[in-house]
Length: 375
Image (tube, rainbow, N blue to C red; front, side):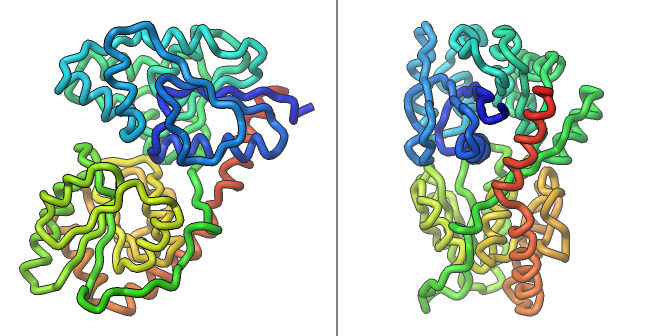
């Protein structure tokens, strides 16, 4: 029976990131449908933020360096942790640390899912069940300053694993750079949590911008700061809301800024609802969750273009600008701050868009792929 299928997700960490959320949301729904779902991860338990009732097993490689990095996985994405370890701590990154994953994948697994470039080696070498690679970015870009790791990450796309790709943009990158594509399954949003809230706005603040507050270069926060500096000169009284786990970033902001440390989904929904504009300023993304979450809360979205093409449509449900263009970003934000009709139109279309991208629909497509592979 399909419900007896054992699915193992092989993880490099379970800290609160968008990519990890996607995997837990999908895995949780498959488990609720009767599938035997297990998460196998490196590092310390750090998944308390997601209420997954199934089995999550953690492993610790025999390495003198990895224990220094594992605590960081509670807060940061794996790519950021690796780059920090290489650049700041001068730690030599050990790909072989992932062999412990290969050695511990349950042998009765029917589907084994790699979830990060280096976990793909573990899934391939374990040679258990049907191997999948859940691709959520063109991950060599995470290592653009390290040619050796860049090449290793790229090599994982040549492994004989089936693919799930989470955005059309990444699929196109894979076509151009690797010569192969996979089925695109876009993430969703929980509209039972992310919806327009009745919130009390402070009278002493005219306009509020919200954005993920993350220092990673690819998130482009410096371009948002530059854009806000430009807007500030137009005499708009601005407030910026940042959220995440790097509160020191408030010191870099040119406007009045509040930082919310790891807000719950409930809290984040309220923050979106009291904001005038939600901004994603990344250099490149792959179906990022913040624009969808903001749309679901009725907050107009300004975003950069790469990796948001599956649900952000310029002048229809959002304003889409080129990355690394602070002036274009500032102009788009200003348009929304000044034009109530535009703001209401984007709000209305954004709410419609969010209803089309639910986690149940995402899980339906993943389930269909896995079932077809088992035939």
